[in-house]
Image 1 (cartoon, helix red, strand yellow):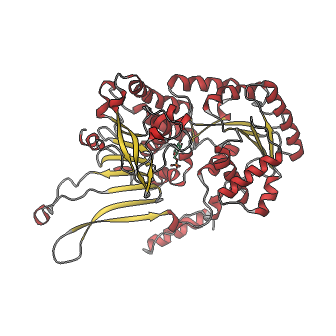
Image 2 (cartoon, helix red, strand yellow; image 1 turned 180 degrees about the vertical axis):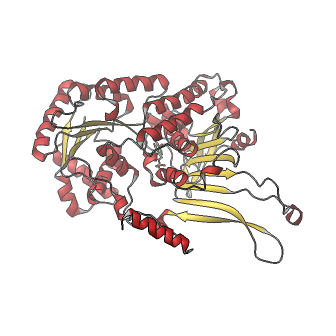
Length: 523
Ligand code: BG6
């Protein structure tokens, strides 16, 4: 059916008073976009955890779903000396652990996996990598296109980007239309100055269109859906503002503790680990204005506008805006877990926060006076990621004489994890002779409506890098605006005379420090 036919049938359906048919693209064709150009994916830091837990399983899944280019190459590099076969065996084990190993498909996939040991501080080592890549490009016909995924500690980002550049690996067009891309994981710096410095180093050899700053939250289906929900429906936008919304809560709660990441987490704490990236993205998607077009830079322009409106915290009076906590021992899923300070590798007097709740205001016309409560923490009662839009109460209750009770206000929940859902709470009459109200919900669950393969966040991110689509990646101006907001807070927390007063212990397996209630009381 062509477009005209579709319009015609809609008009007829409307005239006849029947339901309007959906203008939908069949689900199967949504799973994959176009296939990327043949390319080599070079994982720098291939002996690490990220490669085994996320990157290679994501690549293998893409391969199973025919999402990888044909031909493709994966070249792992790290300090550890491994042969190609040893690297392949390691990756096979990783897929086994992830429960996605398919022996037959693995045979084909593994033939495109190579390994080269590298010394991060040595230019000759990167030049040798460049030579090997040239040979492999010819052998596998990957056209000289390359993705460099930095799966290394952030302290190595600057020097590695420099080495890649000096070895000629950032150059594009060496072969006809060949491209080179670099992928950087957060954290992008540890404050405003270091973020600017890192960006300057990346730009010495790579141009902005070559740089991909990952935030895996953006690639979650339910997070991507926020824009569709808000801007592909006419009924929500008119009420998405201070006139109808009382407050917004954005929560990313985890039951996991610091795990094996003591070295990183001690330096980061929850503000750098979760707020400077994931929480800020969720805030922007919830609060932004509609872009004129669903196009990477227009969407990112609108996000940056949100970051520009964040009201700076009065650092002298942080307690009215921010609660920081650190987990103590407790029980999670029936098991005793140790306090943060007793975890392996953690300083027994550590002041790193593992929980934060902040009250943020956006100084613009749409959101003036509406608090956004952002909460994230480790070792909390449940793994839960959601955005709750709490609407205002009815302005006048005509039921007050009969009911003599408050009427609960409407609430819209955008569930990201574990329930991938959208849920609207509203009031209905309880059946019976007496007039009674009851809160009910209208729910949409992704898994009920869609079947078939769904891309995991890392699969989507890798695919978009290969395709050169920046929609789901941070732009540097956004990174810097967020650091401008957070850096003074971090400084105040880290340099104040009694930092331990700002840090409240909480029991693992609870919802964080009790004091968080006070933050929601005062406006
Ligand atoms: C990462 C953080 O970016 O996100 C981790 O570094 C955190 O500390 C993780 O556990 C949470 O991601 P998800 O997808 O499990 O909510």
